[in-house]
Amino acid sequence: MVAWWITPEILQKLWDLAEEAQITEEMYNKGLLATDNKGWTVCHFAVEIYNFVALQKIWEWAIKKLTIEEVNNKLLLDTDVEGRTILHMAAECGTDDMLQNV
Figure 1: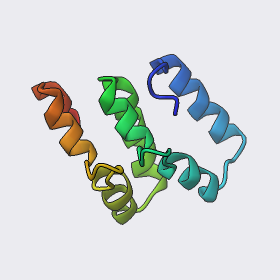
Figure 2 (figure 1 turned 60 degrees about the vertical axis):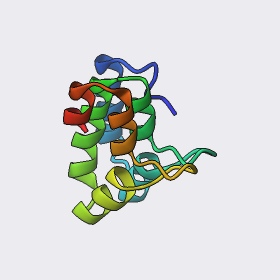
Figure 3 (figure 1 turned 30 degrees about the vertical axis):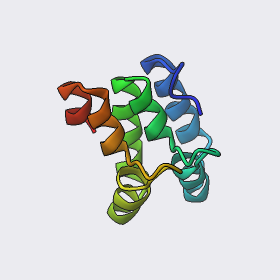
Figure 4 (figure 1 turned 180 degrees about the horizontal axis):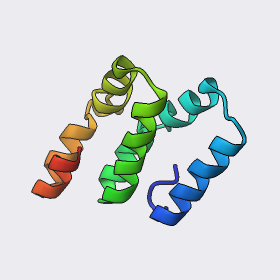
């Protein structure tokens, strides 16, 4: 996953390239909804490393490209192998900022 090293500029460039290339809905879905061997989505990574900017951009993309049900079920409420959602992880961070951003 890329959330740990991504800057706002890199995220915007990726978004622009995807728009120019006319990426299909299926490609967006695979990128936004993909999980690793821990069951983490790109949102889990962004929360884990306190990357508020990446998390915000991911949400913007998700809202544009996914249905509300997909956003809720696959990003907000999806659990990792330990049964934690991104809300659990944000609460564990112990910062109000992270929980409010999620």
